[in-house]
Each structure stands twice: as structure tokens, then as C-alpha cells.
Length: 132
Image (cartoon, rainbow, N blue to C red):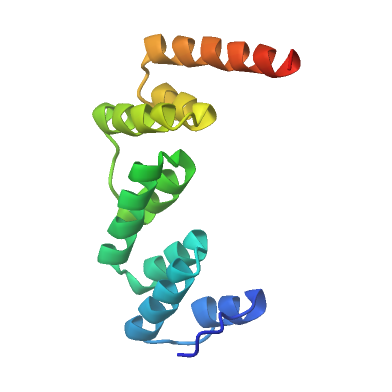
């Protein structure tokens, strides 16, 4: 496969019209992942039923505190997310000052204490920015 990534229309054709092999789909997924187009990589890995690729992206999402990407990849993995896992990704997001992601994660785990703490932090940060 060439280094050039397919356009949106080409991508749709490859994913949903052509009957590409799992190997081809994985190669496209790898190329998109390498180019930093993670959501596109998820689509190709999902179509190929490539669990290892999806798990790699899940791990990336956990490390970066990216709750939305985490949710996107957990769906094709067909894994339920425990409250403990939500709290872990929420803590990571909070450490990285990704307050919206942290808030979402803690809401999913029903961790009311952390939800209130983050809301207070977000209000405080918003007020700080207003006074700068």
C-alpha cells in the first residue's frame, strides 16, 4: 500500500463497498494510525475485527486520558467498562488537566465526590481566565 492515505470517498468505498481482505484493512488502519488519524484507524481495525489494533488504541486513549476515544474503541471491543476503569482514566485525564474528559469519566463511574471537585476546579479555572 502506498503512503498516501485515501480520501474520504475512497475510504468509504474501501470500508463499505469493496471486499478487502482483513490484511488490507489492517494495513490501512496501521497507515492511518501512523499518520495520527486515530478515529480512521479505529474504523479500519473494527471492519477487520482486528482486536490487537483496537486494544493498542484503547491503551493510547487510557494513557492520554482521552475519554471520547476510549469510548469509541470500547464499543467494537464489546467490553464493558468497570467503575474502577472509569475512575482510572478519569484520574489520568485530571492529571493532564483534561477537565472535561475527567468529568465525563467520573460521571460514568458515578463518583459524585470527584464530579463535584472537577466542577469546582473548572469554575475556578474559568474565573482565573476571565481575570487575566
